[in-house]
Length: 486
Image 1 (cartoon, one colour):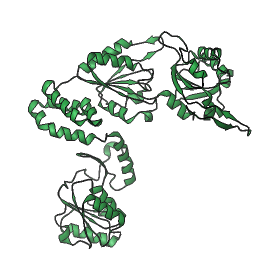
Image 2 (cartoon, rainbow, N blue to C red):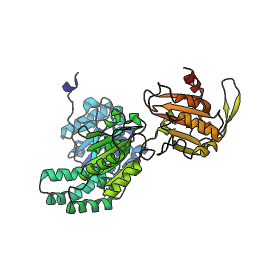
Image 3 (tube, rainbow, N blue to C red):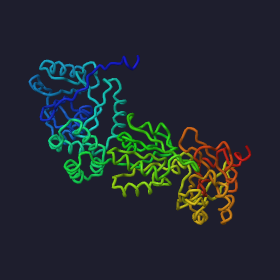
């Protein structure tokens, strides 16, 4: 059936149960589930059952409900907001269903969709905000899976933010005369620094800032989030990054950020490409800094989307300095850096104790471990290769070299010249975490040969250290020596 022709068999609605009686009939495991669910509401829970199981009894005590040791009569059900029946007997459930209909109370018969006047949804509780997911009784497990995804997307303190909004609602209405003004205020309230303070547990500070903003400047300056997009795979984007993208008015993104990640933002968000490649800077860093400041001063919420992690070779320090100088509020959302993704998918432990290693022929040897990890770039701001970290690599640290493709030959030569064994294991990972990823393992003296390989065109990360020998890639046929011979 085409999507446009799909129609729901239910109409989503929320029952008011605060201070009202909700009846549960049954004392077994299914009844316990309903007691536990209703215990998250302000309903007055009354359970009718000839016996209560241990779980039902414990949940009822926790919910502050009452137990009546008999099946209910029609008079017992009269006036209830809702009735749930889970007696374990189809005959008994049908009797309760009939009684509830006699007195005009909606009833849910557990596991019998054909007898239900309403369905129990999977609920995300961020009181006073709630989200309900329902599959019309067809696939309750699917509803729970969807709920789990929504749970992950919604900050636990979202209810606190809604509560603060409720307390301020009348004051905002008095202070801002028009609907557009109030709409703009609330848009910033729910997605700006006030919300960030609430999510960080600083509700008192958030309320003070909300009141000051309302009195001084209801159209306050915007906010910039420096967001790590991760190495490229959509499912490695953090939940906080997804939330920031959904709240952004403007997304300023780099060359290595895939379109599928940029598309996680709102459809109506403005997208600004500021991609830079070595030797080809379409937009200078100073221009990017000015862009972030300008958009924030227009009152917009800006996401500066960077590949990997903003604080690892992402020039976030320069952008933070510019934002501080301009008095613009900002936050940093960390991302999964390429070294972690590359190591994880190739099972390379970046730190490792000394351990025995076996081979396919049964021989054993010693893999020297590493207790230090160095993130390095192939060249510094002055384009000098290997600026200062050779000694760390030689002393046994694992070194992850970013942007190392074009300087691989120099890196290998400098390390060998400095005294590193030419047989030291290395790994070269192209397009880490992406569908077109490729990985090679070999020796340090083979590393020099990859620099001019035309088939390696994506971003490359080089891992140097004995730990490479412990990874899955070390036993794979795609070795540097084979790449060299190709």
